[in-house]
Image (tube, rainbow, N blue to C red; front, side):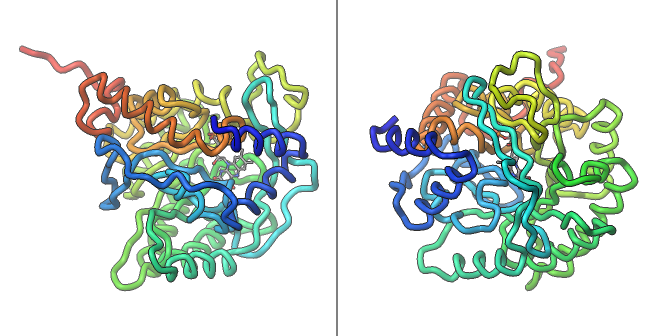
Length: 363
Ligand SMILES: Cc1cc2nc3c(=O)[nH]c(=O)nc-3n(C[C@H](O)[C@H](O)[C@H](O)COP(=O)(O)O)c2cc1C
């Protein structure tokens, strides 16, 4: 880690977690963080949904909820950035404190509850970024619902309508544990209805025949029956991809951090194993026919590679940035490159799902 990164991290650690997050956003927005924009090794290049990713390592939703720093995060070396979750109308989210760092566990608990500046301001920022000379990179938009909305699908449809023409991909987030009832949208009938309406909204709103891929983000706390239903609905509706997944409401007994009993979603290192198992199962159930984004506990090249081997065409991370700083992205890419080359893969796409493939009979 660079000395400047180490200094910045120790300053941020002295602040309350949410204040530290705002300080990091300020530094990024005001170009106070050094860019690590450099060409990626060709083995990392990958094409999914017709989009060309310079590398498969993305920023997960929640860091840049209001689309303020997508360009700055891309320049840290991310292959893509997901802005959001954004709600149709602005809302404050849950009362503070609502964000906790579990240092001993390299984990985070959050119950932010979709604090959002609303989709209109979000969309304006995406448009402004696109209009800037030299702006490049893949930016997705993750949409959610306002806490007090009764017909959830209305909010997703409204959000998609506002961002479909300006985002590179769309995500319906149905797995945050901090909005009451949200995760019920993962049940078979509700999911089928939501995805069909969301896809129709995307098709209407894309503009100029443009149809950005539409993904659903699911949680890691699914029963086998729920996973089965999600896989079947995904295949039947033609949704373009799944993100597996969100934070967990489980509290593994080995957690040591003082705030481990706080309510909310747990992310970071303890999420790696359960979320990777869930990813592998969904890859198996969808027979590798739908691109998956693996997310949960990625902190180095080995954990990113394990997600790829379990079925992820792309990966995302958030919590590890809190503990390792912005230089982490570059390190993960270097380590992932070495691991892919060590195992003889010519491209990351070749390795996708290799741990889950049925052994092929030679006879
Ligand atoms: C503080 C915080 C806020 C988050 N907010 C969102 C969000 O708004 N939308 C969403 O889809 N996921 C959100 N997430 C979940 C992350 O996108 C990711 O799925 C999860 O943290 C697992 O990845 P990680 O272990 O690398 O952090 C949030 C996570 C954290 C830590």
